[in-house]
Length: 385
Image 1 (cartoon, rainbow, N blue to C red):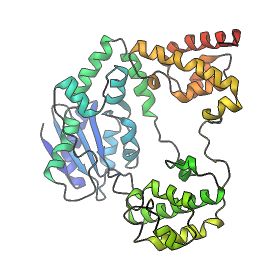
Image 2: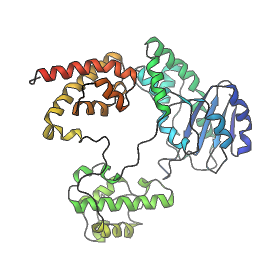
Image 3: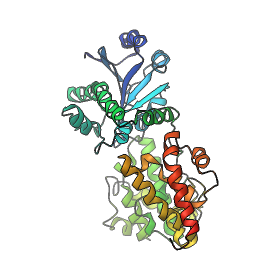
Image 4: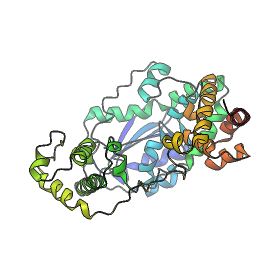
């Protein structure tokens, strides 16, 4: 298909003319997550089957209001939709329907669901992915990156043909359609209140003064990264924040000599990091995390604090895992683990209604309610189970 690079609003004319003639478009977005603070889209790829491919350069401000009027009426064919929907929504681009090839491949039991792997296994195409983690904010874009971006959407229609055939063979197409309908209302999780608590290795940090050091360094890094529009990890990595918190240095020199305090800006901005540590005692933080995802305690504490709930969860997990294995799909796609934990913590009389209230889809509820009820009844009648 012909490929057009769109760098200003006037060059969208051919796309706007073609959109009314189709119900479904393939769409993808390229970000610069490992390079920039922003999660914005720097390039949007749109393909119309047997018509053409448009690569829309959004590095500079471009008026997409006319495009959104037409594009938002369509069903979008995406791969791993939840990764791209937020940055597209920032540009007021929101689908009326969704087809997700990654999600549908999971339901079809495909072992590897990356775009490259699926293209190879289902289409016998070698889809190079060497630019997947590239800096898409740099301009001008090299021709090899432009070619890569076009190929990402070029294969989508054939890929969906192949996956949908698998779903029909396995009588799972209705499951996929319900999942797609659920995705249309997708919104990302709200930002964490205390993101520093979720850094890898923070479980080792117990003392309140050390927790404050981690909070202060994380806040300073975030401020600098936002001001410079650079990925926070390119200043100092997460592990450096944890290392500094654990060491709790008492002098600037002590911080500088810490071999685990690393990163491009660990020494060039040493005074900044040290100032953050010095000011950390003034921070007000809670001893317990403020972020509560679902209103129930962390399941890792259940064995000690809530032994009955722990027992139910231990009994329910293998039941759902076994059913997922029989259906040839990942356990987490059969039932979101958080939903199972909530049922285990406080099962209601109406398990189907309980799951529905959490957001489980009808196909999931129909499959898991019976086995869950049977397991709960068995656990209740046989305390030694």
